[in-house]
Image (cartoon, rainbow, N blue to C red):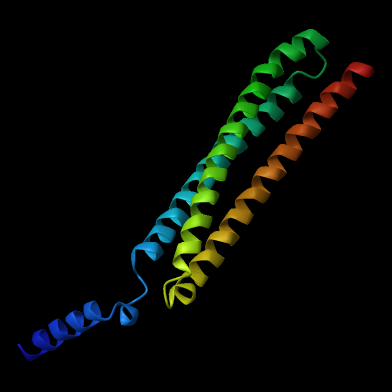
Length: 155
């Protein structure tokens, strides 16, 4: 009983003095939600773009040795799908980044928020960097497959 009263008084005291309250206030919660959304959108973009790039590379490799028009017809839908997915992913990630940036500016006003958010931001940054490098690697493989396909027409 005594512990409950002390806990209630402590909670009431923190409510009376918001500067002493934990940093998990509305701006910090918004930043956490933005980070989660950014990471989710990045992982879904990675899945879509890597899949599209792998399909494009496989189709370009399979089209080697065929007539240029037939190869172009086999590869063109994959290129268009990859491009549309890339544009959609870029727009979603740009919107997520803008929202995160504005919420971070608001969270900087909360005492102790920077210390609380630093590890989460570092982790999110590392995750996004890793996924971007995976996307870039697959896109490079797809570009190389298209170059090889074009080179096969010259022979």
